[in-house]
Image (tube, rainbow, N blue to C red):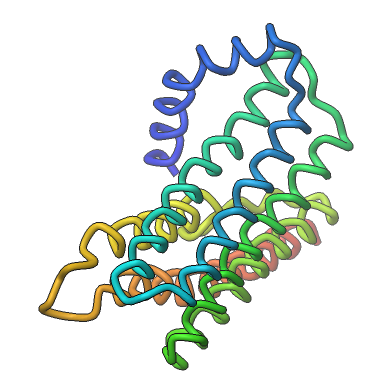
Length: 218
């Protein structure tokens, strides 16, 4: 998609000085990937902690957790960039990055799911679980397709979009925690509902894409 390529190149220009600095310091892509996972675990812990905080404190912690998720997303971009620019790309590194990306996303959504369940948002927790399933399946279909030698990067709700939506939803939930017109938690829940729908839709779009490619090979 053109907009994704444009944004990607823009972000690369912004983070390139940091990337070159990391390469000079001898920081490896796997170290960056691991740091990203640890940050997402920290975000999940903050989401869980928020479940036991008071009304105002809970939403504040949700906002901070969203900020951590967004910050961790930068590490998700920098590991691949450091690998390519620093000529440190490896097959194991690609595997390690993919696996830890899945753990990062799932642990974050688990933290949100825990928060919603403990606060009595049962249906919102179901929505979050659906988003979790969709996120996992988007990645699984691509991995399975690439195992068959197929290129499968189609669909709207890929990992960067999911991370940004989740992070911004949590951040603005915290920012507007004093809102009295409606429950600020729905600022977090709304993007999760969007992910739940579009991530699962993207998974099926990818299945259809692979079906066409395989038919063309026959």
